[in-house]
Image 1 (cartoon, rainbow, N blue to C red):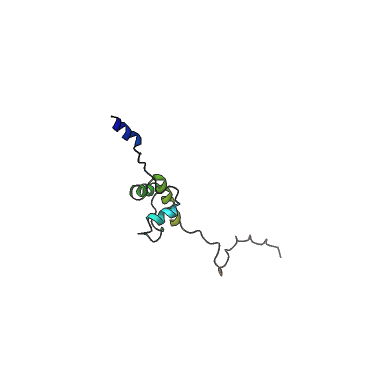
Image 2: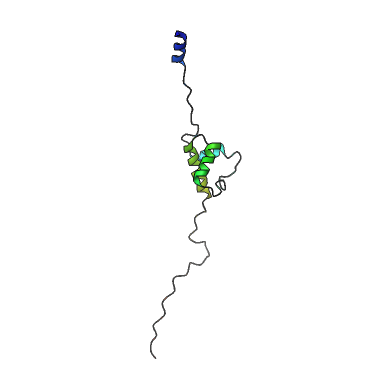
Length: 106
């Protein structure tokens, strides 16, 4: 019994580590996805955020937090780029039409 008690007291408890903790979503993509995918664009493919994060958690991420962060990143790069104010050489948009001039009697 003394031997068992000594072994129990000296045994170290193995704790699981989250290897993705503290990494940015870009780093998560670079470390885990870039081997097969050249770019993050198109990977979200219009999926719902919740289903995408579930998929990533089940197959690729080590925690739900890293899966959510990676899903948000993939969705952000799939968003259409903001429209430019105007390209050089294009005409500015027409203003609203003016009201007609008052008719003057002749």
